[in-house]
Image (cartoon, rainbow, N blue to C red; front, side, top):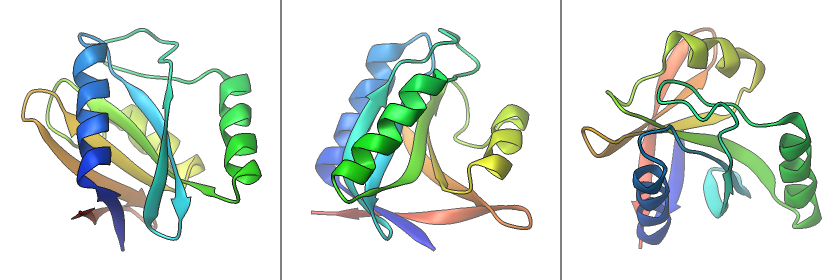
Length: 129
């Protein structure tokens, strides 16, 4: 399994993460199959350096927008001021949101992606032109 983003989308997510510091950033990744077509930045309602959440009405708006564009929410992006690995809170939410979770480390400046199956599994991040 993998998630595929363009180099431009990787840059957009890196910029979002850095501009949100010291707080975590977050976004929905809209696409088809494993290919990200659109990034939908969201407001971190926690306004926290160690967690993020998205208001329920914003989550519904994101899913409605994806449907109107004939896309799906294929991933959830957020940044960490630490290693790009799921926190214990992330793991709990991954169970109820079984899409790819893309995490960017603002300290290591790298991406890693995970999905919940019978356990947390790492998935490849493919960068296209």
